[in-house]
Image (cartoon, rainbow, N blue to C red):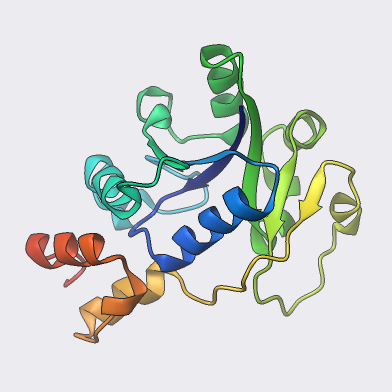
Length: 194
């Protein structure tokens, strides 16, 4: 099976994530997308994150009933911070019959050269790249031209989890930026209000 790994903090998962994942299943060769909830991204501050299990629970709520999308806690038991290359090695050993690709925004592609063992990642895996609003030029243009980089004409989603968190803190409505179940969960748990 061809599986796209969509790594993220998902703090919280929002409609932008869901639209991108659904696009990948419907309009590329990928048969499933796994949301890999990262306990600690080495490029983000951990103290701003909700507990791992809350973020995983929100992903599970958001994709409930869609067999093409899966929530994965595979990084929860791996050393932290989580490096993509280490997770890829582990996941390929655990699921040898699957073919794994990565899904990332164009903004992440710009910083891919800073990732641990990035050359190994782009040599061994397809990377599906969805568009993001970009203003500055990419100093590492050669990565864009690598044969395993596949640009997708996915909808441009100018929405972020940090925008949602700040909006909640400011008592703004973000109801339509989240699935109903995730919105309800956040309301019930009083998340992101401080």
